[in-house]
Length: 204
Image 1: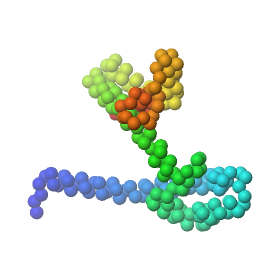
Image 2: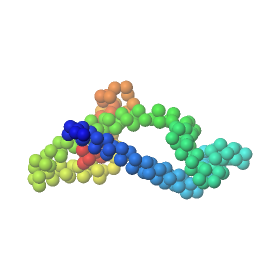
Image 3: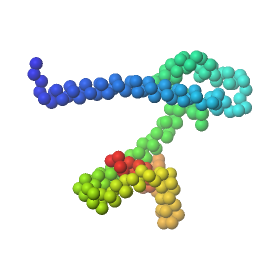
Image 4: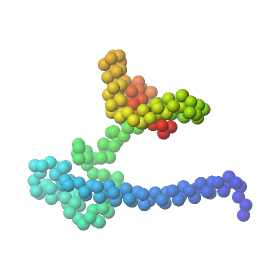
């Protein structure tokens, strides 16, 4: 039976996608196993970490029963998997709110910062790549590579502090360092977005 060439390419593409999805299953299982082992390897009782050092024995026992901490390790792992894939991730050890609620609060700001960083990184990275390709081994190529390496080498937290000091303290420019406003093009994302974008310059 004859198929058009584009049809064969579509079939091959779907075969590739299916193979990659199937190969992803053992990777996900391996990540969960490693995370579970690392969690169990921490020499701290989760009940004490959550309830505090003044927790009474009956409170600790109730916490262990609630989260199946006294079950055999295989049972704990499968219980952990069931909660992981059903979205019941339990409370945070930091503020005792559900983890999903914390994600709903903090994830939008993270996405805003990522988008702002990519808006800076894409033009800079593409420009540096084009210049390096057109001026190979030229001084412009060396400068662009140096800029890309500097972007990766400089710690983001240090660069962010320096930029904040420079613009806010020295130039008295305010309102550039807040993430979470309602408009994507808000000026309050400029410095955080630029700071984060320096990590992506070589990748783009």
